[in-house]
Length: 114
Image (cartoon, rainbow, N blue to C red; front, side, top):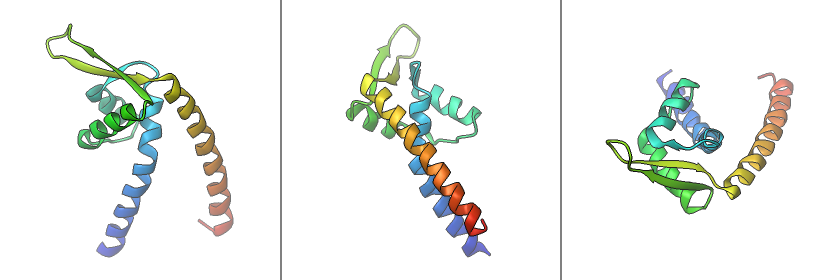
């Protein structure tokens, strides 16, 4: 049985990797800093390791989907991220694609006995 659990664990990791970007983008209509994103996502049932999130934020910023700004007014400087105009457009398109995939997969699962 341990083998089945290991396989499921690995497959769940793959599924999560594919959906985490959409989850992150969905929470950046208002500026957020990294740890606030971890907390917000966790509160909504999506656990993201900071070691996964920060490289993702940097990559999305490099792809110009996110904009960032440092806030140095607090005791500890924080880098706030928000969707860029390009990021907003990409997010909208990803939502369309996501909803389409859900419908398709639900049809497959329904007819496949899942």
